[in-house]
Image (cartoon, rainbow, N blue to C red; front, side, top):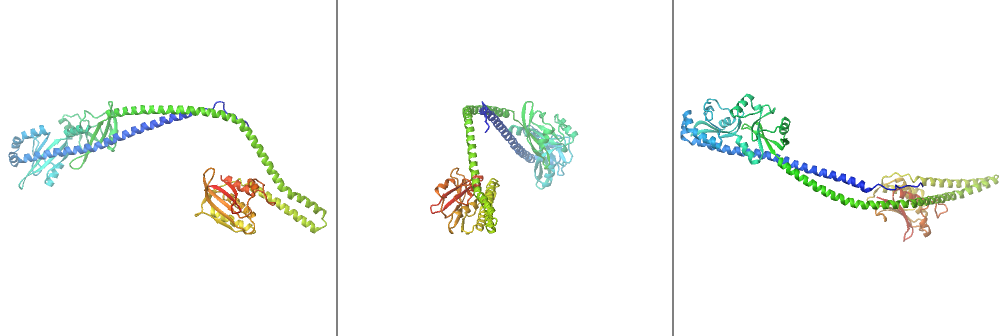
Length: 582
C-alpha cells in the first residue's frame, strides 16, 4: 500500500464555518428587515384603502345632513304666507322683498348659495343669487325626478360652468293646486373641507372632462376667482381641493395607477404622501369623477424608520453575541480537530502495517482456497491418470477398457460439475434488485427443488398474511434458498419434512427492521466443531460435497446488506435463517 501524507497543518474549520455562519446571519437579518418593511407597507396600504370608503361614507353623511337642512329651508319658505302669496301671483319683486333677507342669512350662516322659485312647467321665475336670469326651463336631473315623482329629490349635480352643487328640489302644493317648485342648493367645497379635517386627509375633486367643455369651465373658474389648470391631466380636471396645490409628482402615470384601483406612494418636497381614489356620482347616477385622498405619512414613516433602526441594532447585537458564542465553541472544536489530526497522522503508519497484514491474510486465504480447489480436482484427476494407464495395459480386453473409460468419464463429469459450481460462486457478485413478491419466489423454488430431489421430501411453507413484497435480487435469493433446501435434504434421513418460514424481525446488532427467511429440517443437526466453519469456502463434511453451497448463501446475504445464521433446534435438526433488511 502506498504511504499517505496528511498536511502538516489542516485548514481551520472555525474560519470556514464562521464565514458561512456570518453570511447566513446577514441573509436572515436582511429577510427579517424586508419582511417587516413589507408588513408595514401592507398595513399602510390597507389603512388608506379602508380610509377611502370612510371618506365616501362621511361625505354621504354630510350630504344627507345638508340635504335635511335644505329640506327644512324649503318648508320654511312654503310656510311663509307673504312668500307664498308672491309666488302664487308670480310677482318677482315681491319675492325679492320678502325672501332677500332670509336668503342672505342662509348664505352667511349655512352656506346656501342657490335659491330658485320655478313654475309648474319647470320654467324659472326667480333666482336669488342671479336675479337677472330667469325664464329658462330647468332640465337638471333633480328637477326632472321631482317633476316625475311629485316628491322632494336631492343629489349632486355638475353645472355647465364646472360647479358641483348639492341641490334639493321640492314640489310646492297648496291643497290641490300645484304652485311650482322650490330649489335650494349649495357648493360642496365646505363639505370636503369638513371631511378632510375629520379624517386627517387632504381631498381634491377630480371631474371627468367628458362632462365639461373647456370654455364654460374656464368661465366658471373666472366667476369663482380660481386659477384652474385644464391641461394638467388628459382625462380629469381638478374642481376643488383642500390643499394649496396638488403635488408636482402626481402626474399622468400616477393618476392612471390610481384610476386602476391601486394606492400609490409619492414623494413631494421631502414629504411622503399616500394617495387613493373614491368614486363620485351625481344625482342621475353618472360616475362624474373621483375624490382624491392624499395622506401625509412623513411622520409615520419617520417613526417606523426609527423603530426599524432600533430593531436592526438590537438584531446586530444579538447576532454579535451568537457569533461570539459560536466563535468560542468552534475554537474548542478546532483544537480538538487539530489533536485528532495529529492522532490520525500517528495512526497512519499503524494503518499501513495493518493493510500489509490484511494483504498477507488475503494471500493466505487465497492459498487456502487454491489448495482446496487443487484437492477437489486432484482426486478425480489422479483416478483419471491411473485408470488411463490401466486401460492402456488392458487394451486387449474391450470390456475392461470400456469399464475403465466409463470411470474416466464419470471422473471428468465430477470435475466439470465442480468447475461449474466454481463459476456459479463467482457469478454471485452480480446484483440487480427489484420489488419481488416473496411468496411467488418461494413457491417457484420449492417446485424446482421437488423436481430435482429424488425422495420428494415434503416442504411446508409458512408465510404472513398478506405476504410481503421485498426489494431483492430474485435470482440470487432463489439460488440461496435452493442451496438451503438442498443442504436440509442432505442432512435429513428418511422422509422427514422441511419447513420454510418468513418471519418479520429486527437485526440484533443495528435494530433495523427486516425479514428472516428460515429453512428448518429434522435431520442430524450440525456438529459443534463444524458450526464455526459452515460458511468457509470448500469446507464440507460430505465426501461428495464442494463446500460452496453455504458460502454462496452468505455472499447473497451480504450483497443484500443482510446476514445468514445457523443453529441446532432443541427438538432436533438444524435451522438456517437468511435475514434481509426491509
